[in-house]
Image (tube, rainbow, N blue to C red):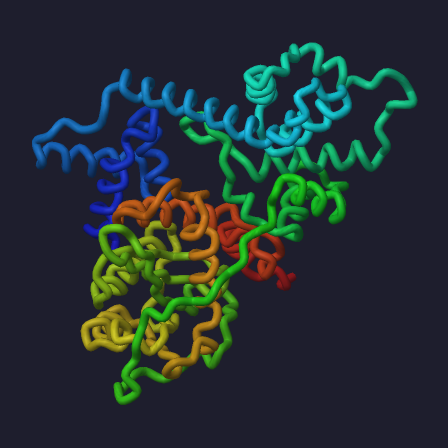
Length: 428
């Protein structure tokens, strides 16, 4: 099995670093992020970038002053946007002209704070609209005046759960803006499991449901899978060795693979994934503007290298590589590569998504959680580099932090680590 890092992986790391320098405060932080996303060491990323820059003969990156100025401008823009959005929300609230009563002001402030707006932005917006309130005055209004004003147990519990949901579902980006975190894509069931195992073991489903509704969180829903492979029914291909059984007793016994696409301003970008059936871990992926054999072949080379790099190399003749009947996977070149590596090929029937159902699910999650949201990429998809950067972040989250109900609400990495720590739990 390969021990040398594939050239495609090195080019991918260099491209992610060179095109996202302005978003990080230091080169070290950027190298660590890219290294963690791709599963390589930081020193390797730094060395590859340095070699690329020496070969290109061009100075890289932007100055520290430029980065600081970018952060300042983004933070200022964020505050201005918050004030504008609060003013828009207060249009009906201040429409009467007269000063609203104190309970109404407190209720409006609580509503905006629940939507993750800062108190300073709320007070600044109200001041611009002619309603001047000091911060300490607002705190005094919100403080209980006596025993009759004490909150009920449910109110306190709901407040604690809502604060926990807000802390897990939202984060602050490098520009100081409050944005949705990957955990904000969860539905009520996963959010409840995450809160119980991290912050509030006594949290209930009803409190989580109310908290998510008040914060505008609904969870993502997978959509229809696009058709990316057009098989030829007359092609001679390998038999289906899985027969729709997507379980495995250990890692590196059954791998499934497929590709999907993303529309960008530049062209279509195709992304190929390889997933281990045992843990649903994405072993490797590769993105390209060309839907050819090289797209899936690079993903296979990366998967073999990564398993060796993790200390769990794949043995010859010991595992199955399953795909659909797409021309990339049934090509002579790819089939010969599988034979050389001692990999048993398996191909599903023509036009039947159930023969690769687990991979269809992974593709659906990728499009729903990564492509159709702004959690992993803010703005339109312009180039293949945008897709690579977001995909690397999503795969890192999917493998190391995302809760999977079929694995007992733990991540694929934790599931594999538990297997290697105790491979025979039933033995005496």
